[in-house]
Length: 459
Image (cartoon, rainbow, N blue to C red; front, side):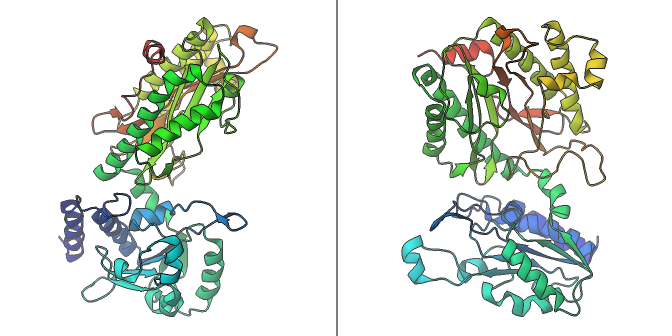
């Protein structure tokens, strides 16, 4: 074993051994981040690369009002730092004794400003973070930039979607004579690392999912007594807040009646009409990890015969799709199974006509099922990874990955469809962990059979 491998192993064990140590900010596990940086740094060292990651900017909503701040996910993944105007610099050394490998640039404290904002973290807090070698004033970044990145072949960069920093940095970089000759996005390296969730990450996801599920279930008996979609939204989001969720994972979708047939409907102002369905696609965020759960229930508390037939078909497709989840399976296999079950079911119901193979090859099912069945889940609700890997091939599932499974059928008003089917939109979505032997549905406790839903909706 090389000295480099020994150092890496020690860092890995250190991060795991002290995993119960938690930062004071939103229960994030402090030493988890030094473990992640050690893995990232090992990849940088093999490329003779250094890395610079910038925090997310603050966005103005309108005059003198800012959007609530949310840290950039890649930056958060490696630091746990939730304030803006911060830069992480990683400069791997073959012999790191007495050499700084992790530098953190943070703003100085402003006591007068903190009268308005409350206390903020500064240099003293940054310097004691596990694995951070030096903390430096944010405004001194460009004074140190040249000496930090000299001697590396490659610069791995994340601007944190901060356009102002990007422009300034690119201008300053040109003035450095011995700068790295190759520049690449940090996501090109971090994506594969972020796709595999640690035990700590899975715990945070489970908490987000449990909060989401409890809030959804609590809202069901109330729905027959409410008048508008936004009232259901308010009940669910109150359930998130009272359980400690800091924010939504994404804007809530609460769609009733014909609005259930619009995939990402977010107006949430429609009226609840007895006899219609209501679809809620919602998620709380816990420790910055996102839940994403969809359930479709009857406004009156009872499914109609047509609604029941479509619901049971979607549920059958979802269960079949979940059954494909295991290490070695293709990311696309889950969708292909859902498509086959839904297409065959739509033929049986008379909503599609023709042979199964032809309908699938010609994608006729897309009239009613027009989206993918799954996406990655993690720090982002549509987490990093995309539909294909870095080689353009379908992702192969591995233990530790987390995906959603969410088939749906959406029937709008159409001349070639009997009116009894109109405005029936059903989607059922669960969050699924790939395990060593198969899968575990993290949202399994949230009911989804017709009998369970109708029972829980009774006052």
